[in-house]
Image (tube, rainbow, N blue to C red; front, side):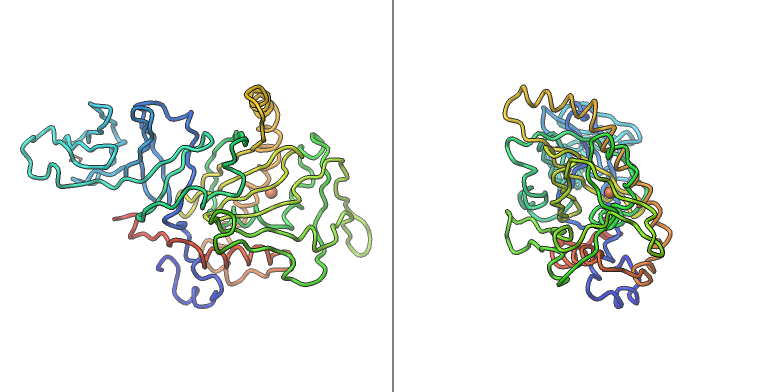
Length: 385
Ligand code: FES
Ligand SMILES: [Fe+2]
């Protein structure tokens, strides 16, 4: 642990591992792109947990190597050169590496070099699932993908559509906003509410035991994924009348469609909102650490489809309706909310100065879960290695 000052980490005993993880958790699977966007022989630059990477499709299969030549440390991506499908050649002195295992297999400028066959550039496992490209940013034998995705995401009949963008806030501010039960206040004027006739309160007044507000999933339940369910909707009275000084100043939304009554967040940073944005769909969204100041907002909406014809109809509906009305129209308010927290947490003091209230027990449980079950904290040493 070394990303945050020791005196700050000492004061956040319950979740020091999380506060230190400004670069994300190593040894987990992360989605970085959609498979349809990576064509054969067209390597793409990606930054993940601070590391510059190249992802390429070779004979249909995806591979990922660290975008840095072993010789003089330059990025291959400055000028991509590839003379066989299975290799990438550094533009500078012709060192040539295999996509599959990173082995330095040839050096064009000196075929007799003693370095040939002796050096290896770092490679990371890649897996395509549900049309999404997942990279295992780690060093251990990768556990199955199912341990790093929310339950139901990989179900056979679940059809996934989505989009990916870069947002300029730390990944944790994104995760906490997404899982924040009281943040729905920012969505009160969303186009989606009228557009899809949604019921949405302004907030929740908790009743009873604080322990009833969440359910923590660990110890090999649910195929090994670790997560927290937000149960506040059941353990509270929804607030539909916002009052100041006893007078109603704002009301919630009384649409007919009930959504988002099952919300959970999972390591390494993926939220499941069920159902959403429609009673027949589920939203799965990842907050993937790019570096300490930005993340990929990898948004997907899944719908169970019984046939290819249904699948076709859903994909059409996603493109004409849900992408604009939900992933942009609704979630763009989340994007500026995350960016608005950046200043307060930038020097790490926000983790000490924040003053939390009842609804935040969901966020606290998420922080503790992460601190307990992450597979490693990414550091600058990993990036330089
Ligand atoms: S820096 Fe890459 S071959 Fe010399
Ligand atoms: Fe939101």
